Image (cartoon, rainbow, N blue to C red; front, top):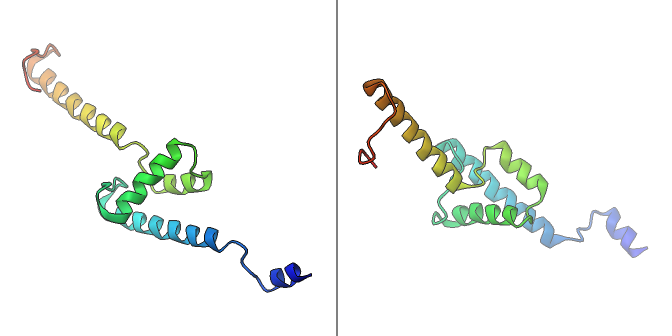
Length: 117
């Protein structure tokens, strides 16, 4: 009877969960603003609370502890789950462009081992 009365007036049984959701949403909004300004979601870990939060989202997902709704929400703004993989891909693309330039100049892809990096 008392529980029903409290439910009728919208009593919150989980204040901690609501506070956690509010905090998560606040950081997500900050990340969205960062993404709009910088064109990506690669916030450096050392960049204050947002950087720490972004790093934590990656760790939680890796451990299977980030709920799917949050994963989906982060995916909608192009969240980078592996900054290292992105960096490696970028490095590969750079080297590929260098190779195509070499090929255009030398008509082959036989780059001397001691050339460049």
